[in-house]
Length: 402
Image (cartoon, rainbow, N blue to C red; front, side, top):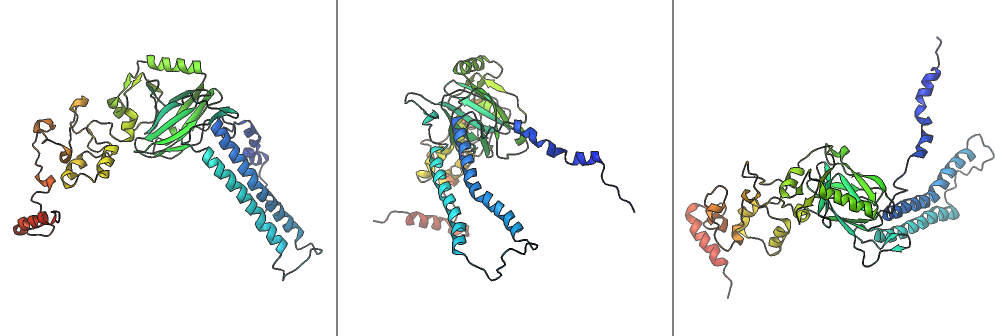
């Protein structure tokens, strides 16, 4: 039975992807050739580490091929020692060389870890260009939303969505957080990635040394719209950056980014276009970090202050639960309300100096504070008849001893 070899076109199609490999040489490797000094130092660290590891990898790969060829079965001239099991010289080479490489990598990593700490303010903007004492970094507040990026410029009083711009050669200080799940803020041309987490604030410092248009994205999977969670990163000259700020302030499409506008913005959406806000409500980013953008919700730093002071006690359990700082907890309990002043008013009764007026509550219902204060509560498993005696016993036992 005759068999036919594959036709020439079929073979060509099979190996066609290999023919495209030379074209990859024209692709830009932004990680190893970035536009920022911090990213450049990180790229140099990758190259140095790779070369140090190749000092071991290349000889091992070459010796593997050499030994396989040298001691092949057909080579009768190779020395055959079936009882050989130790060589001091070989052991010295095998262990000493990797140990030296590890020492070098450890020293480089130790130094680079401190110099390239994302929380560390920049000491230079380029090799040999130290940051002057009077130079203030540009602060940019970053919020990872589902699935878009919000940038707030407190110095300029503006905000943008899916568009980041910065002047060249000016240090940048990022304050980064998230509205829901964890993301990763990453501009390869500027600096390394840093996580954005809800209820927390992370920091990153960087600088652009070249003007141009770059791309930033999330490097941590965060749901359905993750693949389109990208934004434009522009490095502009100081004059062009001032013009960009002026255009944003003159934009009337979005108006002010206040709390109500933010609560609408943070709703999950995909493939969002660039938005520009001409003004931003002060302290909005701090409210986002503390998960209390909606009026009436307790901020995390307030909750932590209460806990640090010993807590609100049993009298505040129920009301503190109503003020939970969970992202969507008790949001908009007054349905159909658009006025921020009328949104659900809630109180921590245990911390209030005066009783809560019933008219201040959205439902107007009076509040019975007796259960919250622990009045008349039964001990678990006790009968109703013995409740007063147990309450009195608890009260007497709680008195300080003389």
